[in-house]
Image (cartoon, rainbow, N blue to C red; front, side, top):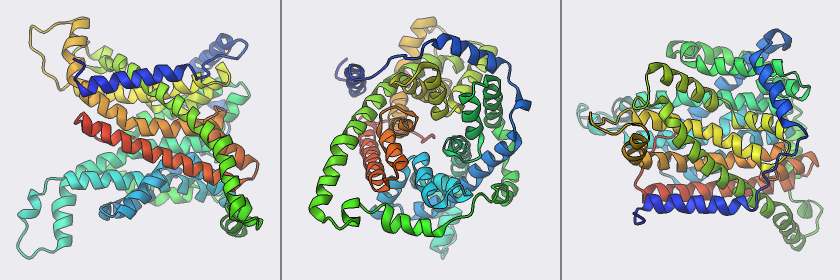
Length: 488
């Protein structure tokens, strides 16, 4: 049994997570968390939409930022996918997608301020890298047969458009629609850095203890995501794309001298900016690495590995909720609703809420990451289990779960889990902005102290860490010979 690569890898990850638990701060430090949780639950059950000012404007701007950002990212990503064979383009795309949207927003805030360009580019740039990678994989895996039956003399462009793109078109459209859902989540959390989306009002309501307003905003967000297929029909998308830029608002005027100063002074390492020479630069870098990068990197990895195993546990527990092998239509509908709510809630928002209730530690971040990602993988594995045909005399109950279904879906489950590994790492880093001592904590501290040179070094460390984890994840997926259709 222990000769199975999948089992050995699984046990290794569980062992690493168990080791990490000894170093993780998992305490609940708030005075009376259950009372606050009760107040929050009451607020969620009694949402008050009319108490939230400008909620309509926030909703429109959330959608507008998502549509414009995803459109730009999709267009740029498609063009980059055409040249994805180039190592330069692959590395460039890996770098931009390794930096979380909130990090991009924090960078652009320094020279664009609270202008719509900040939110649009914060979504468009990392999404371009993601689109490029996924579109390249979809085009590469498209059936080449239609290209061979085109009339003789057809040019390369015709062969590409009518052969490769035509075959891959349904997959390209499907993935773009899924990425729009991700864009709505990204747009919402941009409100946490001050942009006028739903996250801004959610943070304001929560900090004042207005839990009915929090409930109303969350309900509105779930409805927005849950009805995406209704209001974002393909024939309506061109109209949305045309209107969305006009819905962003004007924001504050851009001070272009700030942009010039940012690139020519602010991000230049201080020893070089002050003329202290290369030797001082080395000491400066060593200080950042020892006092900020390494502690932040360690905490990021600890949080990631615990959350990854937590994600796995939740995914394996919840996938039967939507599996046709474990219940009737009513129970599956309830299961679908539960998973949609869990996977639609951005990790950042969920972690923010839990941090307010339980106090600052890694526990809220672990729970938020595990719930969100576990629901996503549970949904995918549940759908996969529905394709399995069991014998009429197959076992039932726990025996069906343990001996019939889990062994058959386990390869796909691991592939999805390792694919989400990089995503969980990105989220673990960014949750530092909320106070958890991951890399994001040090990045945010450096920006608050107007030390952008230090912030850029730490963001670079974060990006390199993500690229390294992505490379390990690909190797592990190859080792267990599992392929996965990329999700969010």
